[in-house]
Length: 206
Picture 1 (cartoon, helix red, strand yellow):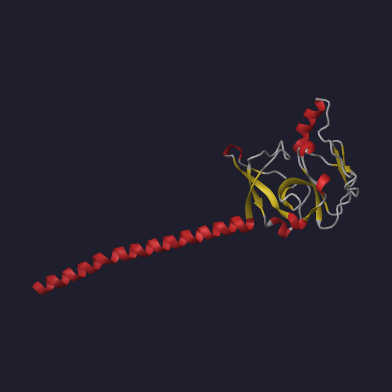
Picture 2 (cartoon, rainbow, N blue to C red):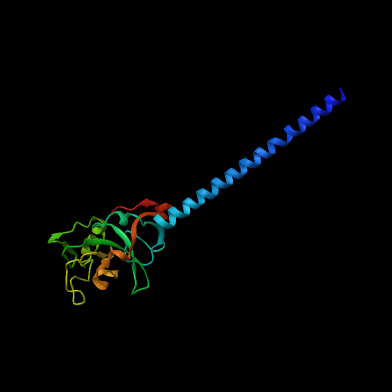
């Protein structure tokens, strides 16, 4: 009888020790899953998407200083930029990145004269700044005061491997009218989402 009791005690002791070992394994598995998830998030963020902070008035009324954007870095590895898309690109001469809107692409002939922008001889319907232009016109002023082509850039045809960009705030923007055509290799990606401030979160229309 005494031996039976001792054996039972040993068996119970082993059973009592098994659950903690199982729980420990579960914790390790959870930690592994969390680490893998964090690595994936980091890869997605830094290889496919990049945060960008708007600095300056050049894209008003559609973008404002301090807004934070998500820039899609992979899209233009698949296809070329298209007219109307908002892009972020490097400007080596300025030592920083700009955010502007693509107005014309390779092979297009672009002309900016006052508030009329034409691409291949056809006026561009710029709904994204129509309200701002109408307001300026009511005040008896032009929305844009910088034309193209000009003395610095007399050729209005966009060369291969480049795009022509302008800021939405035409009279307060340093863009292709001053810096010339933007090489595709300098483009970081397309601005796809405003994620800060929270009240202004929305997908960007192109």
